[in-house]
Image 1: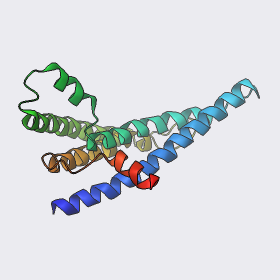
Image 2: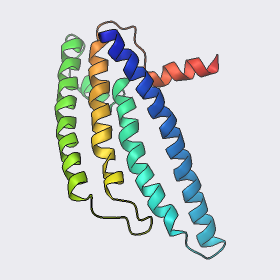
Image 3: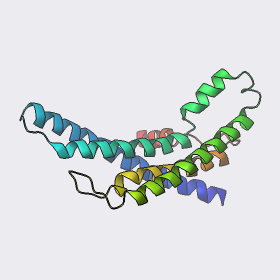
Image 4: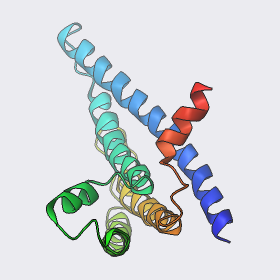
Length: 174
């Protein structure tokens, strides 16, 4: 069961990574096009602003989900460096941090679902898409953060699971 869950999370994280690359490229192209059209052509490209803004929101939440899987969240490093007892009780402290992360993002998930529901009838001013699509980054990202935090808890004591970003880099360099 644990191995199947970890394998599923690995597949999901790989798909999220591909989607993140796409969103980052899209945001870059939209920003470059917007700058070029505004300063060279003297015609504002308003669509690029909305696309890059909403892409950035998705990038933040999906990227945070990958960071959660690799224990790369800032809370770990700051707390470990500040507390003198962190080295002695590191595993217990990591469990505590992971549980707090799960609780926090559970609230963000429920809040995001409510925000999606409230804003489901609104549309964006330029693209004309439902505002539920940008707001979906909150619950989707929060769900993935919770799932990746649970996966990280599953491999906490084993020490054999590496960061998904490092794993992808090693596989692609071979």
